Amino acid sequence: MEEKPNPTRMELLKIKARIKLARKGHKLLKQKRDALIMEFFKILGQARDLRGQLNQELEEGYRYLAMASFSHTIFDLDNMARMVRAEYGLDVKEKNVMGVKIPKIRVEMKEFKSYPIFMSSAKVDKSVEHFRNALKLVLQLAETETAIKRIIKEIEKTKRRVNALEFVVLPRLEEQEREIRMRLEEMERDMFVSLKVIKRRLEKEAAF
Image 1 (cartoon, rainbow, N blue to C red):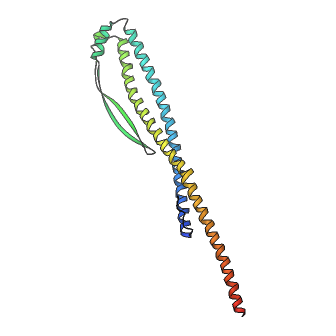
Image 2 (cartoon, rainbow, N blue to C red; image 1 turned 135 degrees about the horizontal axis):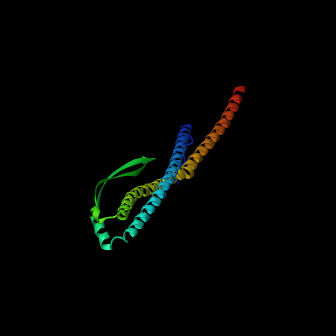
Image 3 (spheres, rainbow, N blue to C red; image 1 turned 60 degrees about the horizontal axis):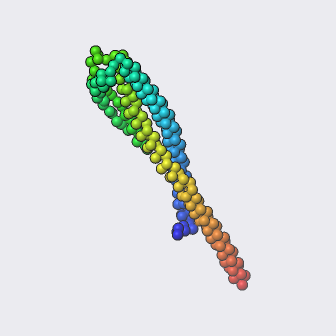
């Protein structure tokens, strides 16, 4: 059972200060929630664009590979694929968005080894180029999808805190404030009545 607050002026001032602080916190958390939702939709749009680009690069890569199969045997294409070696450098940093750490991945190709020119054709080269682009997009997509998951988690956490303040903490504090005010008003009325009684008694005694 919740302990009732003491009906004193000091306690009333404390409750009012807590209400003010809770309202300020509620406002700030709502602003944070709204900013996170905006960031979520922004990154979601980026993820959709990246997925579209990735699908396009893969489609083009397979299209050129299919065309290359008309002038190269499967054995030749398999040999060329085995000769392709790419070494990438990843620079992973984090940026802070409203308290959420979001990864930022920068991809840099350090070394690329390919098949001899005499084995290849323009169709094979274009296919390799599109698949290389697709790999970079996969890494960028992983970055955005990780960011989306973290932002969703933080939005849910912030929403719970907003709701707790709005529907639990503030109503309880406001009820305590009303109760203290009522008790103080009641005590003041009782004190006023008592003073009137004492005054009348003193007036009667003075008359004798």
